[in-house]
Length: 63
Length: 469
Image (cartoon, rainbow over all chains, first blue to last red):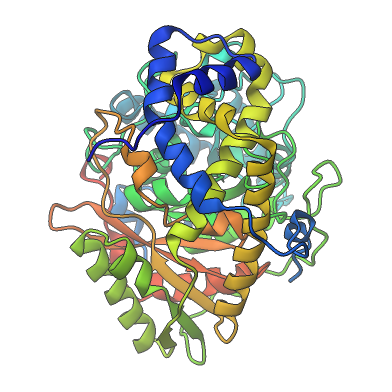
């Protein structure tokens, strides 16, 4: 099974530049090739949650 | 029951402790035995990045003198251990198995390093890890990766790879590990050792090189659950230097170990490994047999419906990569190629995430914590497979595979629940398999108690890797 359709290469390059990374062409090729997986799991993650679901609760674990 | 004569003359911590207390075993002799074993076996395993031989001899002599003078500190006094090389050790090189920290010598011990030293342990050295506890096994770091004592062609799992390999080979009696997505539990499974990922906040992370702040757990690894209980007793406790450290009462973990499971309610997470993510048949059979053994010990074992593994995967990936990137951002910007390929090619993916993605992942995590809490209500512990199968070959890097396989261990990093991983048998080829025993938040003692009863009812602890016998 091949990797899912990658993100737009220019978009990948912009993200890497914004993160302050300097990669070789080969390294950018690799990130671009697997970027479709990233898009897939970000889509799975989604955005639609009630406002009451907030990260601060994660650290309120009690015995 | 363990028998030192069956395991190549290497005792468990509990056995060695009893012998030392009765003055039938000298800490100096024990340390010398293990140094000899390291010299003989570790060239094939690469489990040590640094053997602190001189320091170990000095420490063992001091322990012996104190014990002979009637000043025994407790069950770890004179016990030789190793530290995963992300635990900072004052004046002793700490590298995270990376060129980035090739010559790093900390000026301070981690809290756990200090606690284990105060308990009287003898440090034999620093143990191999996947680079910064995520990027391995790698062949492009300054040291070769650790190998599996059950078959050196196979991976010992990771990232606490040196800890798993060294314990199984009988080079140390116990070790520290860290677990951000399964890094204690994977080597415990593949090397047939016992590994405890405690509740989030139970063991201080201060002075341990971070991977992902909100997922990192420090914990013990050893040959038996009882040995993990002894180590955890020394490691656990509130530490104001760790922002995530919990203020909870620390129970007597060893006293909580059980002989039977009468009245214990066990939730069996069957649907992960039989449904959505089928594991190797030998692993599935071994976990089923573990559930049967628990029933015979008196447990009420019933299937439990947890959230789907694929619900945990996106949040786990986004959080671990985002937080790791944040820790390493400066070095990634200035020394990108000093990291090994596996580390940098994984962590770089975080550059493709937005701030919204990270926050949504944390919110998804909160929903998963709530769903897990609801699923677990009515059970004392849950059990599930610890890995998709037995250890695999060291060679090759399945870049795409990492995205396709959901993790059987990450759910309990996201939820912060305690997990004791123990051996649950061997494949026909003689390779170890493992089962996870999951507790409620800060129910570490219960998880260990159940795992201990199961372990004692099986014969798996009588078998060491052939090279170690």
